[in-house]
Image (cartoon, rainbow, N blue to C red; front, side, top):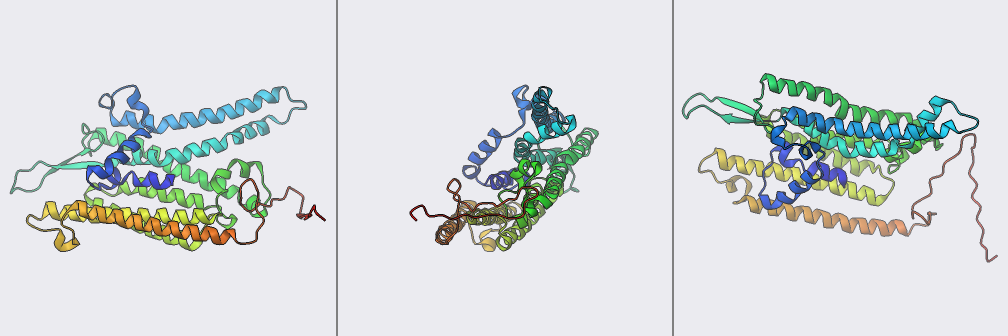
Length: 376
């Protein structure tokens, strides 16, 4: 659900999708409320150029995560001083790093889509026509988030140069980090022998079937493409962004339905449902963009002749009704699936109501199940 929200809130800023304010005002306010652009707390945005704001957005989470990791190492070394006998210093420091790795991964998971979107918006420009009517078209472009910077100027190039470095740090770096950690967990997970690393990185793989333990890297790739990399498509081809996003959502929804990577049936159903709803959002954004394009570029043309809707509100309301129908359909399906699974004779843990995960300690090969009825 959090990933669904992270993607759906960038429809207007990343894809230039225009909807009536009554549909987007609450999502925009919520997106601003959870934004990590903390530079505005110290100085108004007008006093800081986008380059300085980008530095604050991209580096403040890095400092927070580094402080977190350093705290874990410091705590381990504090207790290492009084330990007897003392283990190796580097081994104890590594364990300190792993102690707070789960919290660090959660922060990266939360921050990386919004930070990546901020980075890629360095290339987001708005074009303005400056040529008089009936003369060759001339346009000048300015950054959407800093109208004082002309796109293509030296000031803009300095911002994009910084953004390239942050692309390596955040979108690419987080994807490489997740993939590397999951690859390192491959053998222990397949052998069902938990290690300190698999326990520290459980946030990345514990919700998935062992066969698809790597799915979180696929999910991160999808979020990065939909919230960031599509901004590399020029603004004058903004509709192509919607086409790419629609294709990505279609392929991902089909893959989810075919693979079903989650351990819980309810999670599989919820993942497919949110993917289809997101696909409908992008289809709706396609249609509203076409509607407004016809209305604005072809004087006297009626969008109803092409789309069958005479007003934008009617089009949006129809999409909302369709989304609601899809959610109800999947809710009914989830209820029936849960009831069917509940009737199967299986062993479940009282604490979690889920199947027990049978793991083997190092050097062991067998499990023992001892069944006993006290009444006998």
